[in-house]
Length: 166
Image (cartoon, rainbow, N blue to C red; front, side, top):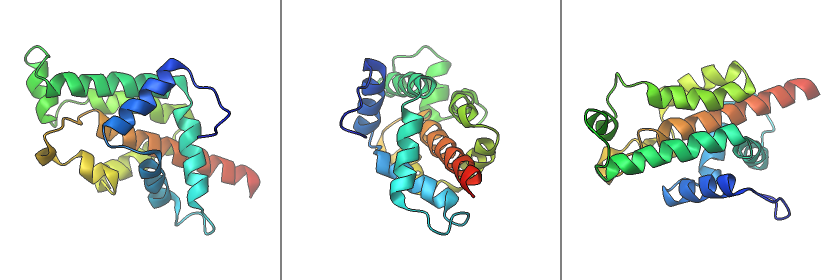
């Protein structure tokens, strides 16, 4: 993140909570690289990081991050009413609200983000494998989808930028 860029309290909290939950911008950038390396022969990690930073600067994305992480934390602490507590705590397969929240992020950068999101959600590379590991004791029902969506949106942003240059 650029040193001279001022961030608001929502962005600050979103970034802080991502880090506290074990997610770094570089982790997300690695997912972008995974999604885009075969389409951009000279792709650099710096480009992936820059696109993730741009996605994280969007208020809609920040709102999704803080909402999803807060729900995960509440489920971890057993503070939700049933049946929502069990649904989120176990990441029930028919509960799609976590994906719907992620779509709000993917939507910011167009339809290519949906295919990127679907692909990365199935593959679960890198940080997504860690976030989906139920043995950690953490509830990341929303966070894994949010991180995948940020990567998909950054990939879409990168693809659109490259299309305008080439």
